[in-house]
Image 1: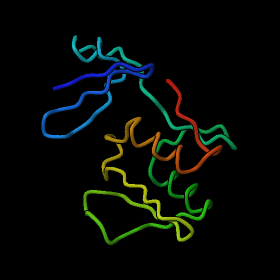
Image 2: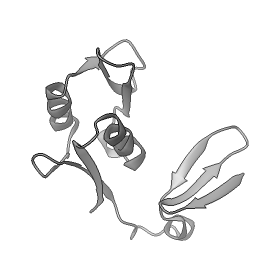
Image 3: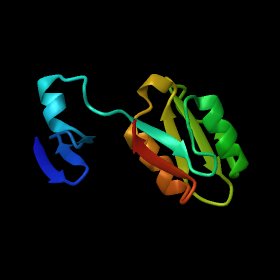
Amino acid sequence: MFTKNNNSGVWVFNTNGVIRLIENPQAESQGSSSSRRKVLVHLPTGEVVSSYSSLEQILTGLGWERYYGGDPDLFQFHKHSSIDLISLPRDFSKFNSVYMYDIVIKNPNVFHVRDM
């Protein structure tokens, strides 16, 4: 395992090629539940995305469509005008900052990730 620090946390590189970001390495190593939770905010309305149904409504308005050809464990969206694909875990409780930042990058100036 190899780790690299940056301003947003610690990137952990495992020997099997899996990479993950630990946003609060002290809290994770101590098993603390006091780490701040991230939320995805829809900037035009200022609302926190609290379900996939609300996220789907926003993404549909931005030209994204549901993609049904992939993994049944994923909730996916694609856009005809790009090669981008947004893949999210079907279980919203597993929707974390990694997925949120993917949405932010693919929809500039529409979403923002904030600490709750």
